[in-house]
Amino acid sequence: MKHTLLFFFSFCNSFGYAQNLVPNYSFEEYTDCPMGYPDLDGKCNHWTSFRGSPDYINNCSPVCGYNNQWSYQLPRIGQAYVTFYNYEKNFPNRTEQIGVELLSPLEVGVRYYVSFYVSLAYRLEAANIATNKIGAKFTTYQYNDPNLILQLPNNCQIYTNEIITDTLNWVKISGSFVADSAYRFLIIGGFFDGALIDKFQFPYSIIPIYSYYFLDDVCVSTDASLCEVTDEECDFKLPIAFSPNGDNVNDEYKWIQNCSDVDEFTMHIYNRWGQIVFSTNDYNISWDGNYNGKPQPTDVYAVYVSVFSNNKQINKSINITLLR
Picture 1 (tube, rainbow, N blue to C red):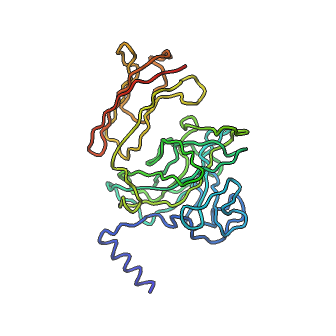
Picture 2: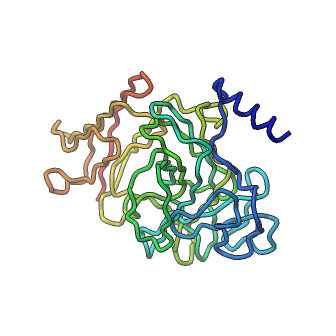
Picture 3: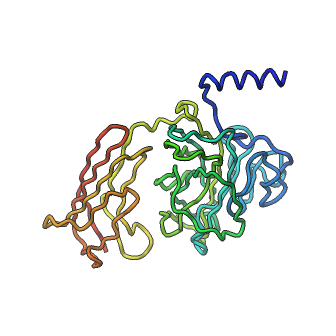
């Protein structure tokens, strides 16, 4: 019977059958119940630590179950999930990553859809910072960096610009990209330096220490519907103000977007006399409030953004306030 099923699987693939390329996508398959922190490697099938020491949560464990050392959370599906740091205040580059070898390498030139779900772990005295830049990165190689020695790449194929603050529900992070290499590994976690991450500290927190997230239900496929990705429409928002005063909160002006694929991008910012004080064609670059190395004054500025994505042109403009 086993050989028959394998033959059927191969038969379907030969006719373009789309599948989730992520083995053990909801972390249900395990060798042993986790009995401490961290306790992922060798316990959760297929998945391993790529950076730091992510934790494995499974309700089979009396120690590392739903009521765990970070918070209380039910899985999105099944009875298991994993956890990872995305930021720590005293060690800004302390991020963790968990990875898996895909069922088959990605094909160059093919568009792949990616989705996974996260929920913020919250504990008043420690895990009390929400962040963005949680992402998924594809590589052709496997690595292990338990001591956080390797330099963060500050990029990945899929990530969110939205600060995820939901501690009750599971929030979907999704997108798509065209593979430019025969990637074999999927890695999820933090890939950005702390200086590039936006943070929100919960009020009444005793001491802000770190940002910690739960992860569940991971999908990679050529079929958008299989991963429940509906990101073909590109949309974005332009904030109305920012404050480049060096407090690491809202110090740069950037667009907020959910575009899966940006082919062309332009941002121009003008002062009240019509002079361009900032211009870029790179959607990852933000304005720090300076012009020719000099801080610009508190005032109202005009922002124009043009995006070409998925064969569609979108133009938006807004007046913003620079506050110091």
